Image (tube, rainbow, N blue to C red; front, side, top):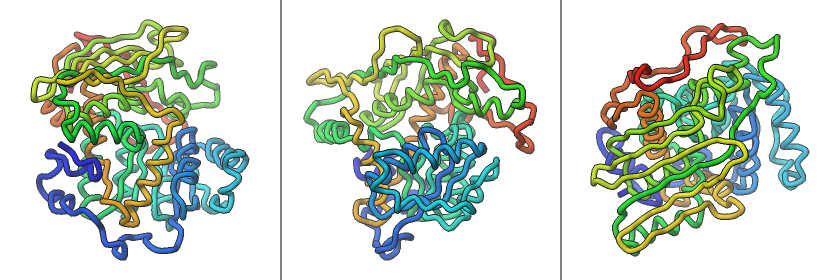
Length: 422
């Protein structure tokens, strides 16, 4: 079972070179980059709604930080984010901590490199998740602490890169906190602690639900001036290589809780799904499903039943049900969402050595891989195993020189029996 205070202590992570690095508990503050009275400098990569809100949450939850650099492939996104942060009423007490000078506005597909090289201490990663492995690797190589939005990639090749970089982060004592905010929510922390202490008995079954409404970013379609690559980024949620499908991009929250409760990942999965609300074959709605139901099985025989759906004007449900040998519990995010600012408090405290070292890299990467296993099982119609995922050569990321006008063909809509798992 994983430790609440040190998620890297999981059995699956304590092998090879990461073992010694993950075994310690408290870091000596004087050895931590950024420790001391000085403010820690943040660089934001990805200035959409989630990145903007992550900065706002950090200002609320983590004192002694300041935003000094921002990067995005779109100038309007970056400038809009900065305007939002400077104009929000709730952000007015923190304006002295928003210090992004014009020379630290970075635009383009290489903007992430410039943010990382701008003298910051902490990198916030909030681009579409298809870019996450490349950006995470670069941040760790540059010895930066990282707040990394979920999910940690959209394909097995990318997620394995995250796992390798997370091990390097542990060796370097670099803090990694994920945007899976339930891991910082008081309710979930309490329930997991009580579960670990044996109060509820053994887990017998798990149910994970994200039954909600569609995410449609560009309902009016592609503008004439947008090339393929720009269009796909403007409409990233509907494009598999960038968003990963709902089960990966959104339902990860619930599946991650189930893995957290079990202290490990499932060993196999079968699933089914499709698109009935999203019109198939249309560029606005892309090449993803709008519902997936999956059955995951853990090594000890416990099953997780997972269901995600995005329909308009229909029944909604977002929660987890944990059935133990003593009781049946429904778990929900705390009203008001304290996990959002709390994860940034956790980030800062870990960097400063005030709490046991935090590295969410491996655990949330495993949850991301779990979600991808469910998606690929639904797409292919096959039973897939963890070993198949860890050996999969599926790599969705485009190759070549990235440009706004770059031609990039959208993958065909997946049809079970025709779609081939790689």
